[in-house]
Length: 396
Length: 188
Image (cartoon, rainbow over all chains, first blue to last red; front, side, top):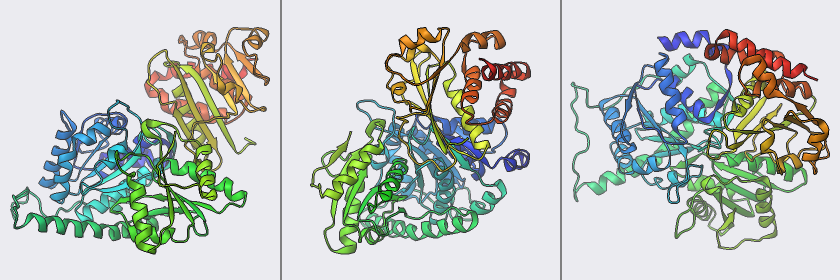
């Protein structure tokens, strides 16, 4: 009710705003109108829950805000509220996400469709509060759908797509933004009217929930040698199907609001000989470099991954099949192994094409280190010269 | 605005209002239909420590996420943080340097041996103290910036200021700050 009043008086007149990624996330959450939000502050996610708490204080959201004593409890509260039948959201970063780790698997295994914004940040030690994808990569096998945003606009849009995807597939979703580089950068964001979002996300109707007295159910039963394996295989099968649902919801969103998302954003890749594959905010920096190199006649492009879990190996392989040389830029480190996105891309290219395309691995931006256009130019130059080895290179 | 895009850097100390100033400009530019990216140098935030704010304003979508290396405009809110600043040395030849200082032009020239461009001096702290009772030079410097390079109109900026600050500062202090913006704009 209050939300309606707010929208009429203010928002519809000013649909374009200057917002940080964090504020854009809070605005999306306001429009989603969750029943419950579990909150525990951690940099660089705090602006999301702070802004949301202010909206609550101002009467703009009805959500029950549950303040907890740690992220382990935050995710536990999410699981409890969602299992009870409430539309439930939260947000976190870094050590917070790591502390949630064991409960993340429970949320997914119980098929609870919660939405979590992650402001991605480095993990300790040494302690560092700045942006990278190490925290998100550490939970990539937890059964959460992982969607990467490049900027504040995408943070906002992908929140709606993520929530709908969660509720329609009954898997939890994390929408990831780069800590600071996106969460704390003020950008132009085009907002959508409250009533149209209300129509798009719809009313949450849980299939099975604890507070449904007409159909009592148990959550979290014991499954031993005779059945655990089968549960996990079913989870895997269903999880892989969410790819199609993601694409369908993106198409619906595009038809409704004229903003288009897919597994990947392809930029100048059609005839590109050299392609960079990347996720997150630095994709924008690469696009800028691609434009400049194209002006000089270089056939270069960038493929920015939006849906990282589940990963579509076939599609990425097909998209990259025409490239001569590829560089994968990871903003995370797998200690003792090749970095995560690189590994997926190599798999995809090999499975789709059956041939070995030269793929170089670069790690960039750890602990918030800035990445400059000059460094991206160097990557394209390396690719053009065939300066590729099986060693991981660092864009320091 | 003749140029299609601008890179602006604020050099300041934590607590001087560089973030507020750059966000006011960002909101104003978006109000005028432009694209922006405004972000601080992401260091530890402490009152009194040197800080940097980066602001890009453009007619087109801004995609790059790298910090500004060659700015068009540098605003020095505290002259004690500009010593040896690469940012100033990288200022475009046709760029503008605005410095909050009591010094004369000749005295300032000696402090900027490697800078050949033109610079604008204004004692923004004194003007702010006089008009608002607060030493934060940001409002005055915003007015000066718009006089030097009209990245947004005064009408939009003062409108945005009223929109965001009337409830926080009250009408009296809001209007005093707007007077400070105009004083910066009209200062010689």
